[in-house]
Length: 136
Image 1 (cartoon, helix red, strand yellow):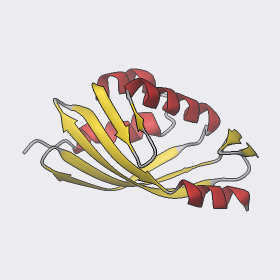
Image 2 (tube, one colour):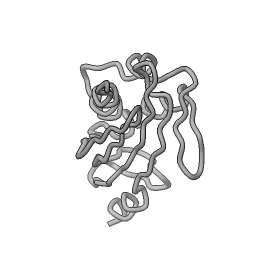
Image 3 (cartoon, rainbow, N blue to C red):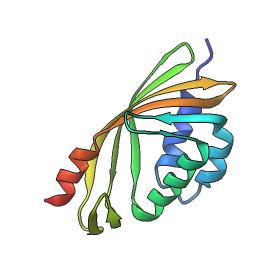
Image 4 (cartoon, rainbow, N blue to C red):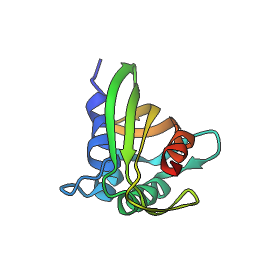
């Protein structure tokens, strides 16, 4: 069985985490399938939407980190449990922030990989916990 964890790892280290040595949009353009879907309970985003969101987050949260805690592979699916953290500067989920407050949340993602590209991801992120931390 092919190790697909490394394909997915790049998404966290060079795209979701702010990395001054990486061009997230360029990497994601090659890493994500053209018909890529990012799915949660409220919406489905395509490839261009996710790339735009990541670029926006890099500006809004200049110290954004997405640290992998655990990766599991079953067939062509890679499950990632990670910790996302950062200190937003600007308007973030209805709050006006100056970078002095930070959040730390757990995320769980199930990635489907085909032809060495991420085709689909189902994801859960504890954004309500982040809001509580940023309001304190």
